[in-house]
Length: 406
Image (tube, rainbow, N blue to C red):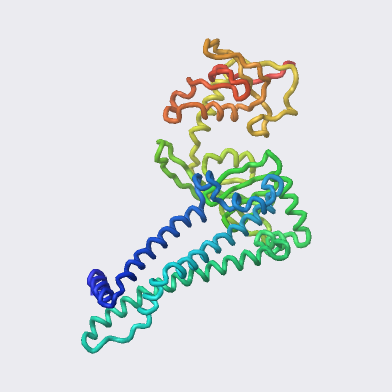
């Protein structure tokens, strides 16, 4: 029988049996299931809107989590455990809701599973209808029960991770395997390095990537990937271009394989925005390489900074009497300040900046681009911005490299 014919016959049969309300209950069940699935996308993979209203695990369980800034490893271990448990509770809540509010739907489909063989009056038609109802009811019933089994399994696994003072968590077991009795000291070392403001912290396609002086930490929904930088090799193996719907710029994603010289170490993969390629290359000198002849797209911001560097090189140099080697850029907190906002252009609209040199060219260039019209990049060099500190207006011609008087 065709699908339409089966639906018509099943509807007529249920109406004769007085099960019209059960048909409405089934439709309501589909709506409830669809609502739970839609809401699950916000619970399991929260977007910016969900984060804005606090609909995330780290916000809900904030009082039970340590500081992410000072105790990164401990925070991620507990965050992933609470995430696993909360997702299991969500599935169990769906199972309980259907069992409590959709009793008519359950009765209808359980009865259809126990239907007898074809009748004598119309054996072929009723047999086909019974098989169809049996298949549909069976799949729906099994899927409903599977949500409870999966939910209970997730909660049980999260409880197992929390035992032994969270020592059963996969990240803790990995450190135990690599460093045996000293794994607590290694975890504290990760926390100490992650508390440094000079770390690189970027979002990836699957979570968050944190690179400290010695460690690569990738945070997923349920797990952590760890790699010691001196023992690691990072290879760019693929690139993917994605067109931005709101702008004409094409976003490039880099796929990086992370392997280690230690045979016990676990290899993993990073998918990161190509805009961070420069930061990755600066953070991982000698460790990041291309195994294939891949074209790494330079971001629009990086291309602007290169043009800005050429323009600033033609501007007058700003002389200082003391060296700035002991100071750090206010933006990246890594490089030494090498530019000063002056009044080279003598533009009446430009103000006089009396701030001491506090920025590197890359950071002041990123600040400059953030205040320009993103839809008109060809006009950025002719645009204006204001000093991040004193708010004095300046142009690209007002930026000067810093030189120390001999």
